[in-house]
Length: 360
Image (cartoon, rainbow, N blue to C red; front, side, top):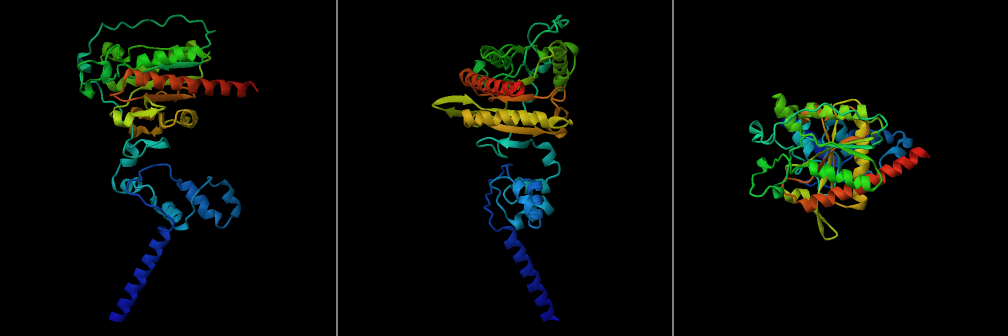
């Protein structure tokens, strides 16, 4: 009986060791490898199938590292040995839904420095400034031909260097010194490059206060602004919502050719059927930035319903709608302006290149 038990134990142990050896073969593991750019489960399935159908190998991603053990493990367990986040997701309920998905990772971007959405202003209930008066939309001729529409849903998001005496990141909010200045500059730079741009600097938080509704309804108010712009300007092709991140300077600043820039990132809402077009647009801009301004873009991030605001961000209204976060609470005006100028440079090249292709 003991011999039988011993043989059974040895057999099971041998099988376990064999499976482990296969799974870990040709895999470099790092405990800090929280990146999300590893092959997807689709690639894993394609690789496993390609062992029977050689023609499928031609559609595998270029440079794909092949390991039957690794791909089989990922396919059947959702665990990626090069992405430690997959272990956490399997153990912590709701983590995957509540965590922004890294669609494309920029240089230095991983699971440890994901973007953090700014919390509601600590003093929102005692919002200061002139009493906001809603104006009826002006009659604008339908012949307007602006190609880009820029606005800011969280219009009072600001930066500590702009607010003398303020050191608490939770108080980095201001009625005038805020992200709308970046939108204005971006619009001016695009105009200089021949792209007609409409910039809307409506005080969204003022609208909320006037109506007596909460900060969480910001996108409801800004949606009205976007819809009105679409009605009055039929030629708008790109919709850009400008924000700022809440991470500190070490994570939101980079140096390019000896000058400091505020890093930027793109957020794509995935809780609507047509988000792929927006994701493609954001990804193209990210790669264009990486080619011309390495390390400037932190990447493209996807957010679902669990990510806040139903994971839409008004991006269901039109294709080529994106949310750009420029810098964090500690970035200076000079750093922010350099980044805005770089964005204008890249967006204009993308626009004119795309226009040329359409004309052809």
